Structures are given as C-alpha cells and as structure tokens.
Length: 142
Image (cartoon, rainbow, N blue to C red; front, side, top):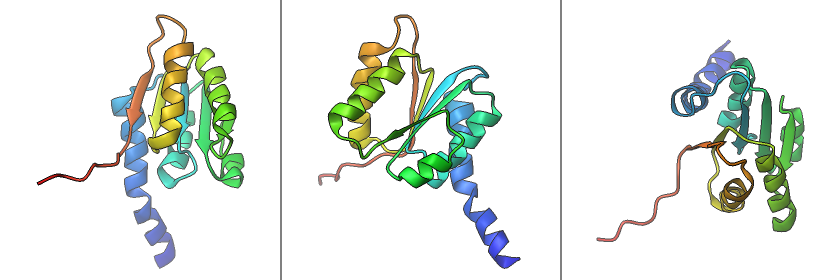
C-alpha cells in the first residue's frame, strides 16, 4: 500500500506539468496534432495520455529510449538518437503535415533541429503553439 501511495504522490508534479502545458498554455483542442518532445520521461508519458484524453487527432512523440517510445500510445515516434540529417528530415516531414502544438520538455539540440523545420515547412497561416517546459539557466554573473 505504501508503495502505491508513494508512486501516486510522485506523479503529482509531472501530471500537473503535462496538464498545465496542454490545457492552460497550449489550449489543445480536440482534433489537433501535438508533438511532445521528450515523451519518454514521466511528464512526457503523461502528456501523451492527456493529449489522447483531450482528443488530439495525432500525437507525435520524440525520445531517446526506443523501448519507452514503442510503449507509448503515440501515432508516430521519432527516435532522437538518429543522426542530425535523419532527425531534421523527420522533423521537416511532420512539420509539413501541420503540427498545431509542441510541448517541449527537452529544449537543447532536438529543439535546434525542430524549430527551423517548423519555420520552414509549417503551412502558411497555420501558427504553431510552442510550449517549452523548464529550461537551462545560464550562470549568473556577479
């Protein structure tokens, strides 16, 4: 019983992060396509489930762990361990098919490849709501 309570308590922050990102920040609507960058972590896995619950038409999940990606209820998976050319090509292809929302748990290199693809291949007049969750902070100079 104690183990179950501990697991439930541990899901509070990732669950709220996923819910707030999709519902409050991105305002995901039923029938929209969402890309979750970093879907193999706790919050990312919950974001996939919440997006499905909210009626997302298509869920694209990215992550490094192939086994975890395969276990997700995502419509399409992008393995982040691919080389840059392959990864850029995959991001370009999904961007051209119109992504409405990006929930980005990773930032960093995957975002460096995703953002130019979104800018170049997203259909004109189709804004993308990009929600970056957490970030790296630069050292503060004193």
